[in-house]
Length: 218
Image (cartoon, rainbow, N blue to C red; front, side, top):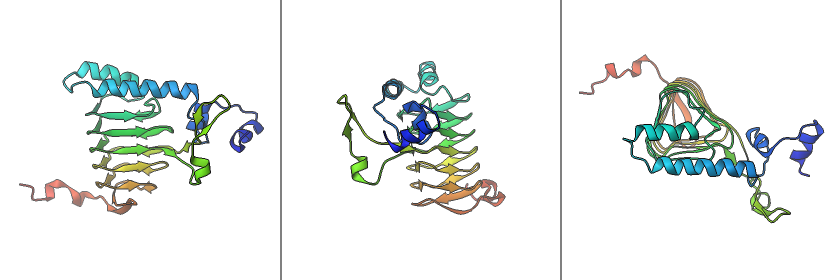
């Protein structure tokens, strides 16, 4: 018995692999329930990616199954890639450009009016640093598995996530933020902040002086 399971049992709890996964504990990704959820999500992603953007009703029906926790209207250009989909919550008026990837082994919560550029990835999984803990192993029944865990990601309302941004496990982006292109977000970004870099760092507050009305754009 692993220390992880022993800790659960000591409290009189018997957690499913899905419950352990969502709680950020070490879990078995070869679990049948999780495998079924992934296969379903991957099929729905493939179905969505094979539609034309003019097939509005067909796309909407697929998204209802893939992302049942989407809050109202959202637009995903496609292609999209979700590990589970059901563990991702999207706010109203969400937009994602090409190649939006979400590995939602832990919850991904995105607020209202969030816009995502092309090639953005949200990655909640974590893997052991020690190779002997990271490598695949065979269970007693011959199934191949490995040890995984993760941490949730949260993005507040009214954010712009520019192209080629990677958001890692445990990241928290406050409302009103702009994350610059190519950034790798691994920690907390306070609200109303312009942040960029690898690692992504808060550069300055966004203020009314940033209004496009004050810029010569003509």
